[in-house]
Length: 193
Image (cartoon, rainbow, N blue to C red; front, side, top):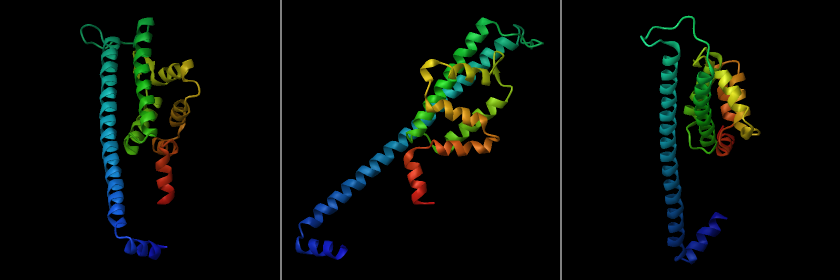
């Protein structure tokens, strides 16, 4: 087959430059697409980190108002959250889980780095098990409240994060992240073991 192609090009020399131009165009498009995707991946990662830092800052501020009096002394025993505190925590957890939902979608589209996303999910595994709370409302309670919203039923993110939370160790989280990785990543792993 290759010899027939070479013979055709030899017999019809005008096709050589056309084929070379087509190959150059395909390579240029591929390079431009890869570069654009890389830029989008970097921008998305930076935006997600910025939004997560905003969440942490807001969490810190709410907890400072909740756990400390006006003089800066820690309130002991820890106060019981009232409706205002519960509402503030629900709003903040909604921001967090909406952010995670966006990260998940971007990851599945190949716009978030696999290793960064895996690390982020390991932290969610730790948060689920820790005493970390917003105004006395735990991460776990925030998750259960958020995922119970009717608009989210059937969303694959719910099963994904439930599975992340259920893993026995933080290192086991990578298995579930791989399972939900972009399709092209699965294809690439089959081609190159």
